[in-house]
Image (cartoon, rainbow, N blue to C red; front, side, top):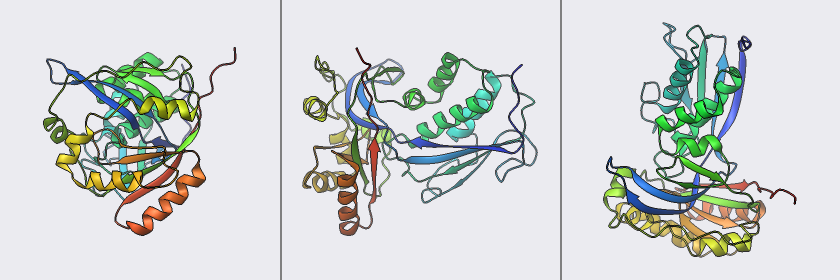
Length: 315
């Protein structure tokens, strides 16, 4: 029997944004799910999720019916279902506790500091759900195997397994097949959202072709340098970019603003939009660009963040 979490303990983690550097739509299953191939990375930017155990907490339901959730932050009001069964944090928590047979778990309360835009193509809700699973796994160590955690993640949404992995990876299928990269150079991103939520179903409805070519093979030497990464990305695309622009024309203005800046190695839309990203060599350059854009476009959400390197194993 593993120990119960300490009374009054609190754990916090960064639910890092998921950024699609490339996204190819290669087919569609009979059940309607689209088949994708993508390269994803996770910058040091995201919502913050805190799990408190053993106390009533501000978000714990008074009847003790299950984990509670309170939400704050600049995008709290835009989060649908913040305190309901539809919220991914609570769905993840209930699925974990049910699978772990923790019927007599101490009071659990989540606090979500929502700093990522909602419906913005960078996996905010999925990252929050993955963070909830990770925090519960830390609070109740040994209850579930990694495979069981991954199984829960798959039931919560196509992006949750890759967010649970949380490492730069090639992703395929509907998002459940995650192959971490052996190497990736450290670099920085500037993330920009024009302040317009974009519904993913609307973007897919505007997609004219669903059987696009797959990602090209990785170079024989991998993606260990920035030249290798950006060179490979130049031969890829985001198949959802054009349909997203049709739904939200402001995306085109964001991309134009990013591509017109010194130091930008590549600029593209992430996921189904409307958030776009620019790849830069280092955080200093990214912060300088973010500051310039913030002055010119005060209505945009803008964030500069590092992407940590993945070091290839020594031979």
